[in-house]
View 1 (cartoon, rainbow, N blue to C red):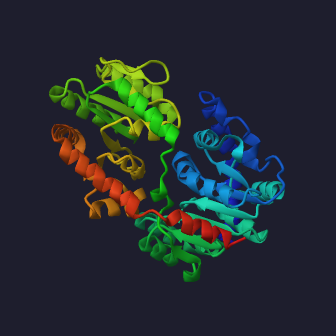
View 2: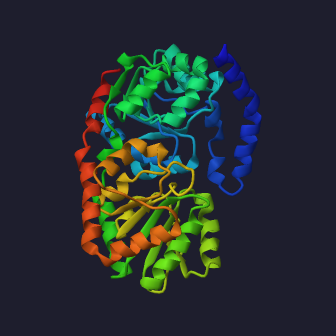
Length: 417
């Protein structure tokens, strides 16, 4: 009954959702492209299809090694990658080109999912992390399509929210075939909201199996050489309300290190112009990567090209991971850690609590609060390279120590179809 009510509410909201999609598409035309996919009208596919759903950029990047393993394991398998955002789809295309197929995921109504499944006829659905859409899972179950949640995480905050609507959530979760949880704490919370213990397995996080392609290493090395010997720090995946704090910290750092450079990479492309304007208004000399080269006079280098964050991390000396000085829950610290960089973060990391717990345990991260502490920590690391190197090595060791989840997840997926 609750699923029926939920579906009716989504149907009622659908006209407003489509209007919003059209409205936001004024400045980002890519959002309007293939809008019919949202209603389930995707190109028909044949063969053995593995449907991989990754909601946005972060999940798409995390899905990369998994998709490569699936393709290598069985060359006859076709992979369809779906996302909810245009940036997620653009990231997937940049990673895989014509190796896989792409579509926007349908909105979560029974009709849209039935149309989508009829056209694609997947052998299995692989959902990255905790993108739980009731009709997506239920409609797959009704067509005998196994639904698998991989790299699954569930924070205490989310678990408490799901418990409030347990009557809706429990039947949906019962339709999942297998959940590959990042940690025992995640598995325990899934069991709390109605998942059978036999369907939950702790595999670890596939994000620890992060890859740095040779081309990315080469591009990072080339960029770093162009920046010279100056101190360079990067703030990746920043959010509204965070950039002003980071710029204030950079101003304080410049008082001690006048040649220091901040590579500032906003999380969402629609904020590129806003952050560029803010940086200029604060009096910094700004260069935008998409438009001009970074000169020796540049104080803020704006990373405004999609899909380059991993490479930009490799050109820095210290990394701050965004979404953590504001209530966003943080972002993935494993990419800078894989480079062996010292990792800094704010305290708001509830979306990555399992991963950050590993870093806390092994002293592989420095947590900072506010512009003063951030600036002081940066100055300390730049003044003591051996301390910075040791912090980076500990962060990299955390990544290496936890590799192996990917193989376990791929084996688990293979068992389901």
